Amino acid sequence: MHDLNDMRYFAEVVDHGGFAAAARSLDLPTSRLSRRIARLEAELGVRLLHRTTRKLSLTAAGEQYHRHCVAVRDQADQAQAELAQILTEPRGPLRISCPVTLAQATIGPLIPGYLARHPKVRLDIQVSNRVVDLAEEGVDLALRVRPTLDDSGSAIIKQLGLSHGLLVASPELLRRHGRPAQPADLERFDAVGMSASGGKVRLRLLGPQGARHEAACRPACVADDLMTLRFAILGGVGVGMLPDYMCHEDVAQGRLERILPDWSLVSGIVHAAYLSRRGMSPALRSFLDYLGEKLTQDPNGDLVGVSPLNGAGGAAKAAPTRPAAPPSPAPARPGRASGRGGR
Image (cartoon, rainbow, N blue to C red; front, side, top):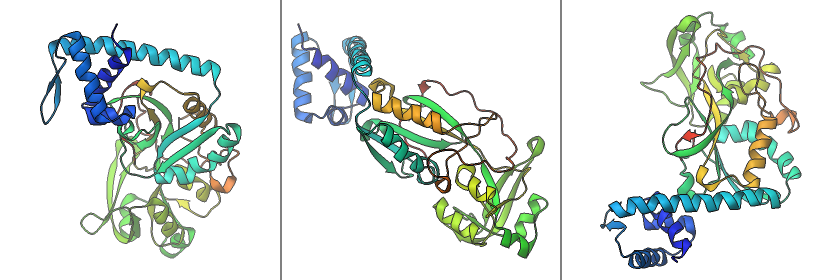
């Protein structure tokens, strides 16, 4: 009987598109993996792969054999995962990718409570807006905030809630310049933003009954980091947009004020993605369950985040008013999703 490990190795080489990526995933030397596949072909008496210097492709026999190898591998993984669920508590390393502002405003305050509940888990959190490849970099869970759910690649998606961009300003700025009554009034204000196209900070607004307006404002401060922009807005430098999970506490405490509350900016779907083929370890399941418990949603599906100012024990108050609701996204479900990280 052939070594069943070789069937797994063959499936990994095909799924990763080459020996080098598969070897990294399996933690094996590339040369050893190549020899094992060559030995498998010799034992079977048939060529499974066409090899060139640029890529690999399956032979007709390889396509058929790959389907069986995947079934054997996935059944073995499922059996092991189910046994681990029964026999082990959450433990070991859990690698997570998280965008900077989501980590600072929402996820970071939750970490102490999670680790107090599951002390045998070791969290390795990559706090970065860099795009990550889950399979290539061995990331177990990617937290993302995007306008739409991805539909490329293979992953399980869990939607955690909706985030809205709020147009805000400091009370001191509004005392100096007055309060805008309509979107066109924004153009007499300085603004802060992540970019300045054509020398202007452009605020693209969605209004009642599908109305749209783009306000081109003078750039007082441009930075590619939302926390930096938050400090500028708090200091009265200009008007700007912040995610609601990042500024709801500032609005609730009066440090910032909503302006043009009937107009909103593009909403984001806060969601988690992980590779389905790996199964769900107890550590990963417990972390997702913990996020589901702590990151509650209001009846509209909006995320009610956790503010560092309130501590990690509960959700902070939502802003007094919410932006005009965009069309509801499709319910999150397992399916095709990118293995790359979010903003």
